[in-house]
Length: 275
Image (cartoon, rainbow, N blue to C red; front, side):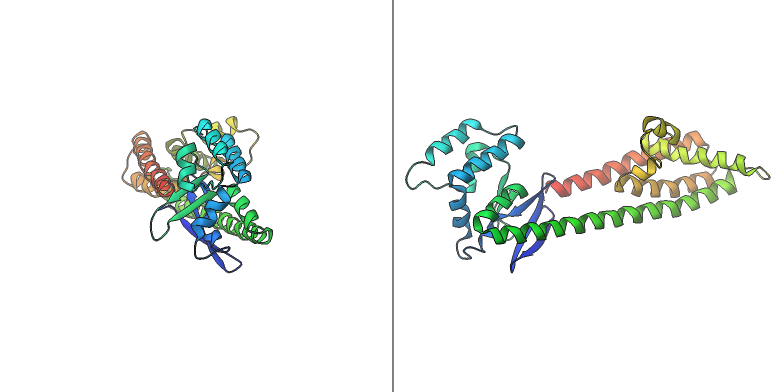
């Protein structure tokens, strides 16, 4: 199942899901605001109007490379006939639409639409309902951004803590006694770049050369998944250093670790979005 969240709009719980990396809002939940007994009929009535057909067709033309234009023209022709009715399932089957999805099941089922289409449906229900829907949706997205920022900062902090463990191992096992702080710094930089190469495929200097317009360093632009892996690698490298493995062997092991863990983390994230 896609990740589900709920927003409350004028006393109605509206479900929001992630579908193909976009936000889709439940039209079925929204339709209950107009008629709690037959929400599917409310959605069908809206979808059957020529305005909705034209709007949804335009959305598909702009966003769906596999949109069936022939099927779309046939639907438009049929819409002029008396008694014409169009269900979400029929719209999807005839036009290969992707802006509206129909999910079966007693729990979590119903009709969902891309947020831009859902907002149009809300307008049809009532301008007031649309206003509160957009306000609550914006609040939800703002909270998500804050949460993602907190998670990123947490991983960055963990990475820095593990880096202290990492540098302590370097100091104890690699750095010879009685050397200058400049010499020690050079060793630290070398080990830091060992991790950079293993994970990012480049040293800090190479990243700066390729990104002259950016401030900070390569790690400041890392994804949450990369920061998780970097934190793990720092602990692993500290252990390998204490075991006496030369830098070349550690680089190979760390690179394999980075590849394996990134595949696992990114693959897991993609699977959650696709379910």
